[in-house]
Image 1 (cartoon, rainbow over the protein chains, first blue to last red):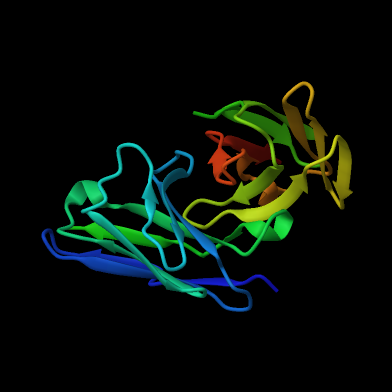
Image 2 (tube, chains in turn cyan, yellow):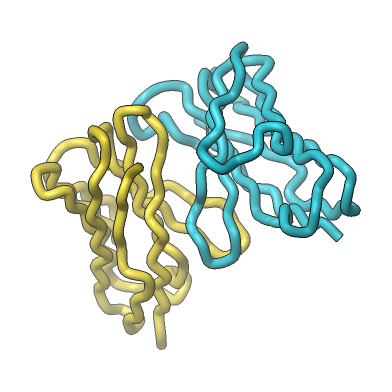
Length: 116
Length: 109
């Protein structure tokens, strides 16, 4: 149980375009989803937290207008990188939470974004 | 913010034991996770501690002392495939996961 599907796994886009990344909880209801960003050889940095049906809460330094997060249902959250630039190239990972404890944080497989 | 410290790198020989320490200072405590991450992949769950003591799961064990803000991950009978980054993550009062910088473990033959 506790499977989170994230896609696409890899995407290459041109500068100035937008990219949407989807994160789905397949066998549980995710009341909260977290979006992380990871640069090479660095740890995961939390970008934002989204709760179903409400606006996302962004961490300090993360541009909410650039990284649009939508959590329209209990099984789906999306992250849209708008007007992408090469410096947005990174590994983006979602995590879904349906409750507390060990089951509470299940990670998606990650999306490698390359902006050219 | 939350402060989570772990060593940057560790090297060990195949078949040996390695202990990765993690110390934390957080706003409250609701559990500590250890994850394994291979390059280019998402983290995979290894262990979860919320009460003091040792949790053993096969070759991997994790220990927690809440009073000391300390945990360790013990990897026994090291195999080449254990070469990876190991992430310590703490859940604070806000129920967000805060990660340490990760410890890169290199297993040598």
